[in-house]
Image (cartoon, rainbow, N blue to C red; front, side, top):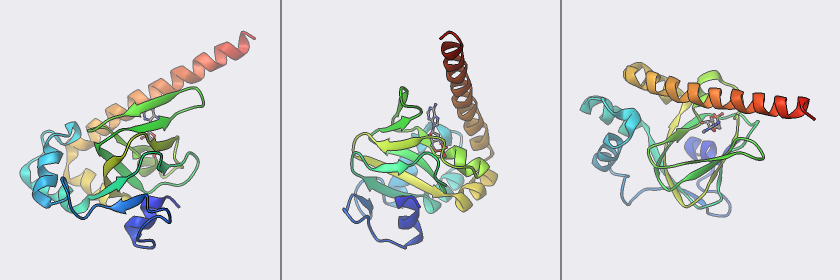
Length: 176
Ligand code: CMP
């Protein structure tokens, strides 16, 4: 089970090496701060103040050290992550890594289809994240309809990219 999942359900208070902690103070943790940060995140553009309050209420803020594994390819995943500060590295394949930055998100694929994580995601720097559990995420999609559209657009480009990569790989193999 992913570390963050265990943090969220309270079964561990922190990771044994102390690398993963809920952030209980500091920028971005107070409700009003969270709302201000949410306003800057493109997927929440167009949300009403009431919707932003709802997001701020259900999302939890976690701080992780560089090199923390946030999702592991092939494992089940129950959280959606939004980057507040720092960057993460998505290991799409052994030769392709994608860096994601503040305002970008990951973990939507497993949340949407219930399948295993499609890639391993590692903190490239110290990262501060908003984390939303699967159950809360589905409530959020109903409350904030614009969110589905943004998610679908991102998902489509990630799938398109994966297909192009598979095709290139196929051509390279048949050309051998
Ligand atoms: P999920 O499969 O839940 O967990 C791994 C995440 O990595 C995945 O959701 C996406 O959020 C992200 N991801 C997968 N492929 C790509 C890609 N090509 N570009 C950016 N992010 C990706």
